[in-house]
Amino acid sequence: MNLSPHSKTIFTIAAALNIIGALSALAAMPLHLQLFYGHGSTDILVKFYHYNFWFVVLAMGIGYAIVARNPAENRGLMLIGAIGKLVAAASWVLMYAIGEATPLVLAGVAYDGSFGILFLLILRESGSRKTT
Image 1 (cartoon, rainbow, N blue to C red):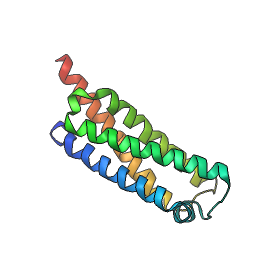
Image 2: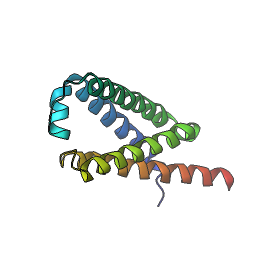
Image 3: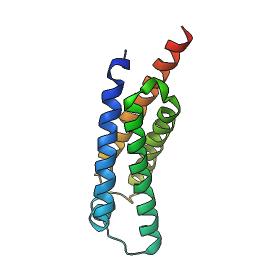
Image 4: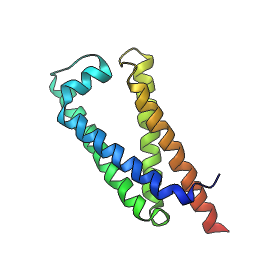
């Protein structure tokens, strides 16, 4: 499977979705917590971690936009993006499995997991082209 011709599009889509998702979660924290976890917490630590997490998601979206401009020159950002996506997917699977998240997080698992795998495949392809 040759994903290289599509890598700019893949990273552009990931950038847009991350930025939109982050801005939405940052703008409507109580709604986001209700939809994803079934409750709206006012605990200061929940707020602190919520905002920090979604600012990282926003930063990752900006990173994906940078990768989209020139994927071959941004392999490090690809790797960080893949790790971030797969860790986020695994975290949401865990939260759902222990009953601390609603089924809506499974959409996040599908999105992050799929893009994490795509990023790894693109990274592998870009590495194999350099060695041949």
